[in-house]
Length: 71
Image (cartoon, rainbow, N blue to C red; front, side):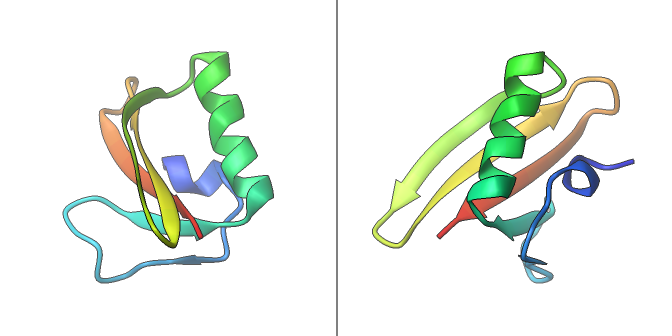
C-alpha cells in the first residue's frame, strides 16, 4: 500500500517524476498531516508557490516518497 493510497486525492499527476504526486483537497491535506502527526510518515519538504503548496513525505517502513499538492 503506497502513501497516496491512504490519502484522498482529486487526481494523480502522471508526468511527475521521480516520485508520485497527487493533487488533494482540504480533506486530503488534513489526512496527510494526520499521518505525519501519527508518526506514519516523515516530512521531507514543504514549499509553496503563488497557486499551491506542496509536501514531500517519506514512509520509513517502505522507503517510499510521495508528494501532495493543495491548490
